[in-house]
Image 1 (tube, one colour):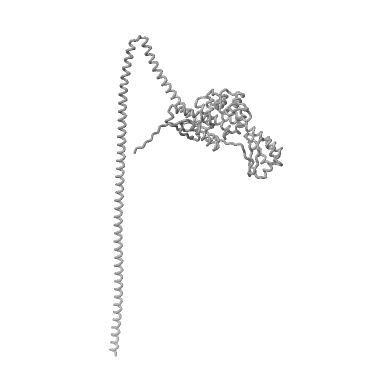
Image 2 (spheres, rainbow, N blue to C red; image 1 turned 60 degrees about the horizontal axis):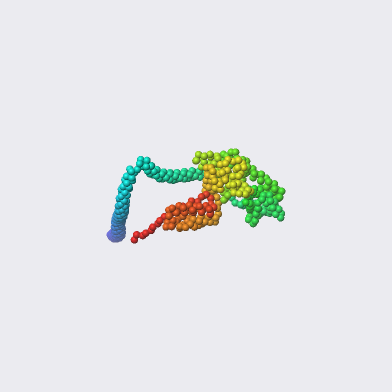
Length: 512
């Protein structure tokens, strides 16, 4: 029994051992399989990494090869550019050599001509020497007195020719230096002057708060507006324009007085004939006081003393007078400043020059009351109030109506031209401006031999091109002068117009 149990235990142990062995065997197989699979996987990874490295190495090699190829191409392009530049330099040098060769040939021809001319001059000189010898032989047959007279006559003739040449040269040099000096003086004076242009018209607008005020301005059956027009001497225009009443009059002083009176009436609100007369009368007194104040202020600003009170009043009136859109008082002040600067540059009396220029347009203050042109009116006023003869002549002659007797008259005319001609000083409509330019070109083109005429620099200069076959150099000078005189007679313009005549011979040929 014990044996059986012992055998059974052995069998059970053997079974257990066998089971354990199989289990170990299975586990070892699984482990081996896993190791194989892991090894296979690692081998595949290593193969992939090797493949990637090979590809990366191939790509790097390829990039290096591309880089080397690009570098070689750049070097080739640089070499090509250098070769091209060398070719261009060679071509330029070849052209330069050709030009030098032509220049040398031209010089050789010129030298040959000069040699030929020198030979001719030598022959002519020998001929003259021979003539002088013959002349001296004749002189030896003369008496001493006759020979002296003959020699002195020849010397006098030579000196007369030299004198005329020297005088012409000195006159030309003096003219050039004088023109240059005059330009310097005028440019310097214009640069030192700072003045603004004041535009004016024949109407003034008065703003009103609302349309109801228009009815109050007109009044019952228009009595207020009639009373206002009678008291001021202006025309009042009340139309459909919102917020505006227009005051119209050619007399700028009355128009300004009416504008101020209308503004006071609108601000006061009490508009009836009696109140209108009171406001207008008060405004007249204010305007007269302002005119006196302006005239005195101008004299003070320009340091002009001893002016007659009536002339001071007339100067103040010029504040409300305009000419070509330019305020006359500002224009007169500007002329006085310019004349003073020019007189200072020339070493003349600065105060007298300012006085002449300030009063040159004084006649415009009363030209609507007195017949005649403003230079004549102004000179008569200056005589009446005992101004100096230089002032009277400067006023009368600043438009060249009478001869200029002193340098102050010339300076006054120059200052007037500069002030009126500077850009922006005077107003002009576009239509009138274009017509003036067209007429300027038409006058210049109307002369025989003129091919074309162009107005430039806003009408300050006209360039004229003439036919060189029809107009010679001598005729060109006379033609230019005739055109300038014709422009002076037919056109009205501020300042001056420069006439430039161009004559040229142009020959065109083609080398094929």
